[in-house]
Image (cartoon, helix red, strand yellow):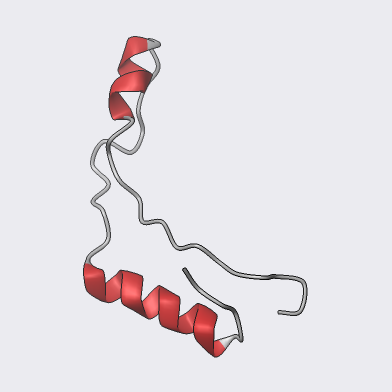
Length: 55
């Protein structure tokens, strides 16, 4: 990927879910689980295999 300098992989988390409740909005990801280390490492490997620098 010639147009990218690097990719930063940031896994999903639930830390901001309270903001949705404070705004009176439905949080649709309440049952979504954060990825495990194996999945994060696999994604990092996929970016590296595509020629990207990963942070």
